[in-house]
Image 1 (spheres, helix red, strand yellow):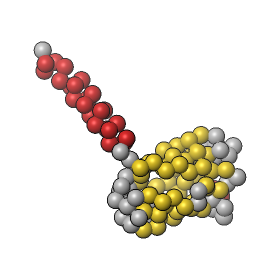
Image 2: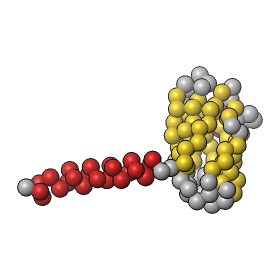
Image 3: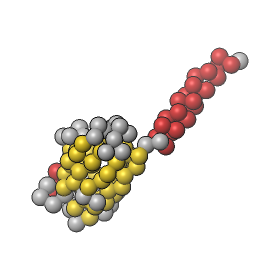
Image 4: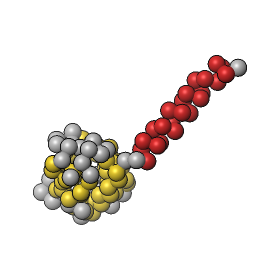
Length: 111
């Protein structure tokens, strides 16, 4: 009887473990408005996984691009997107909006 339900139980436990791990992530909110990130610099703890929530309030899409963070994601206009990074060693990790690189600039600073 138990063996028949084992796959379901294992899947349920994996989901609970994943949710618990995600709950321990550091969360940072970035707002994109008028093709600018606010705040332009985010302070996060070093050696921690970070959940960046990007709220694109502009009507047009923007591409979050960071070679230092190894992330590249298009965020449609008027939507939010979550980007996971880290754990990050101490340092400065620049990012930009690829579609508006002259104004959409920022950095994650891990300390």
